[in-house]
Length: 540
Image (cartoon, rainbow, N blue to C red; front, side, top):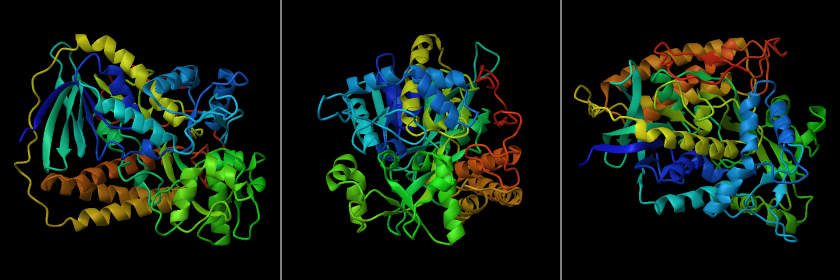
């Protein structure tokens, strides 16, 4: 059985960011794409709404920038926002060139643009209500037809490999140890350049809209390798996920509210006017807090999202996926409201990078939800996430293309050593700790926080970290153990960041500090083994 692989580029993650990067590098070297499950089993596939971009003559770069800065509650890095927006049209054009089919107007065949919360213009280009699936499936088809790209499905990264650079007095990233889930063996992958595109960490919460793989793997690995992380306290809770005992993670797209859906109490009354003049089109943090407030005030399990006042033809043409999915649970959205509840949806913080996705560690990049670019600030605006994936993946690819030929290979890294561990006969420890971690994160570090709750969470996470580290040291790794180890690391980073922020801003709302602070700054955590080799994003 082969357990050592060598490529020019190692991409860990197979969503929009990872696949875009792979396609943009396919002509310059050999590439390995690591996918935890199947290629399509990431968050990209399930993205419904669309991609924000300046595509209409009535819109402008300045307007998109202004809307993003407003949603970000003062923490967006304006340089990153402007860079992303200025490259938005090129990103969409590239996707169209790859074969992505976006919805068009029936009258003039221009692209149909919709509007979502926080946006002042119609600028969301989409493929009905399954944009992520259309983008992801197109990129997957292109990847599978590429000669220079090797795909490794059912593989999960365990840790990054660092080795001394013979030409420079410092460490560099030279690969990763990857667990082959199908064959139950850890393999060694070496590469000149490694890219983390593993998505976010919303699985750290009990309720989430994300698929099972969103366990913060890239963030945790980068932190252990000495990279700084920033703004981990800003976890976006999507306001509207389907509430049903059999519906695990189905998100009700923001576009429903953009097209006139109303949020309602169990009594049928609307309530968003009590919280924001923009009502249902307020940014996600405001809407999520409003729903959370009403659920707790009334002592109910869920509220409702109602678009049944629109025509059946309109609903069926604009939201076929939502209609079909809800019908599976006996809910006809053309005739009745949808039961909804907020759920963890997006990690706004992450591994600190520059405009090219470079991290603090030489030859290590991070793109997509794994990274912190400065774009999202204290609250990600709707449909900016897929845009960030494409823009920064292409930017990273451009930089890597320039440098790849000049990167000297290092000696083969040591193979994975499991000579001192045994097979576990106590996997119940993993499932118990997994459940406990996600429950106390939901209860203590959720939509509304207090200092006392955060202290309780900090106490619990320290005990869990110790227990999980001991378990990891004594037993062979498996998928659940790798994810749990990463989740407890990310949970600790979220809690530390939340404790450090003595204010309420964007997605971080504290009852002990309800006002905005006088100083606007990021929460930057520095590991004890800080790599400190590259120049990263400046403070806003």
